[in-house]
Image 1 (tube, protein in one colour):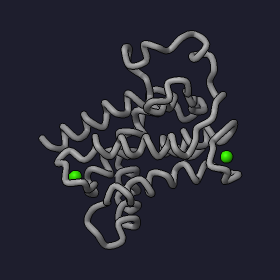
Image 2 (cartoon, rainbow, N blue to C red):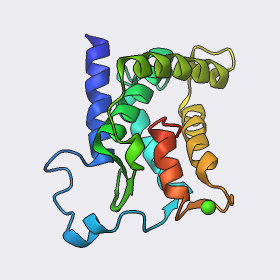
Image 3 (cartoon, rainbow, N blue to C red):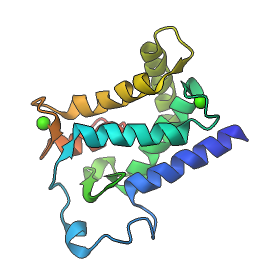
Image 4 (cartoon, rainbow, N blue to C red):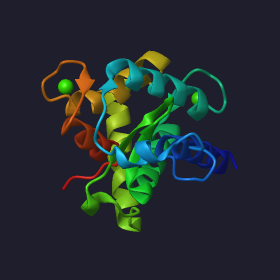
Length: 174
Ligand SMILES: [Ca+2]
Ligand SMILES: [Ca+2]
């Protein structure tokens, strides 16, 4: 039951990120829809997004993220971004980052299993012997995705860095 609730919670968050359901992007206008890879994602945006996500993932409100919570959100987020074919960031309604076409497909069952295992490895590496992540270590782990796409390390994602970030969140490697 907890796992189901967790996955549903993660799905709600991800829908907010991906903007894939009618109603969540009601303010979106035609010009936004056509501006695909334009814009800038700041480190602060990614930080805010990770911080907001923590609150939703931490269902038992113990201010920690355990390995099951982490793996579930990683898989659900990747699947939702791939299914939508685009990444949207909470509170950045102006920014839609399209995935390259090859990455825009739901996860296969085999990919889900593989991604779950990879996420668990990443969790244990980041948790450094602890059984759970603090808010600070959670945000630091999430910001690695940002850093991996910030090729010139200027603290902003622009141009080709944006689809690289979306692919990273989608856990898709061309
Ligand atoms: Ca928790
Ligand atoms: Ca950059």
